[in-house]
Image (cartoon, rainbow, N blue to C red):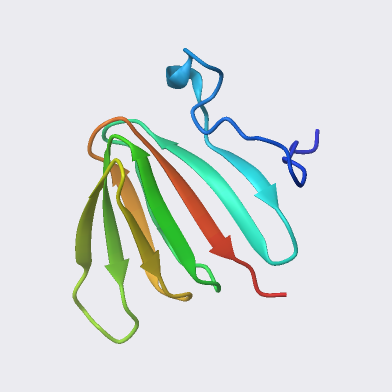
Length: 115
């Protein structure tokens, strides 16, 4: 079954159905040739393993708290940032990164896709 993405002009419930925020799941909200937006749900203690994508990204913490790690090529150290609800960060493409829920968290990830 294909993933149902939002269409242009369609409102998107970022926290699931009203009154059911806990039932929200990780999902790709929409994807075009140049952009992908994902709602990532991270329960406390759950990790999204280190990875990298070619395009620039933004990570916006909508609820809860996350730890975001970054590993720049050619550097041995891992940088760590904590994001709380209402905070966001930008990350250049090609940087290895990972996330872990410090509390139950919902984040909005935007990825610029290279075609």
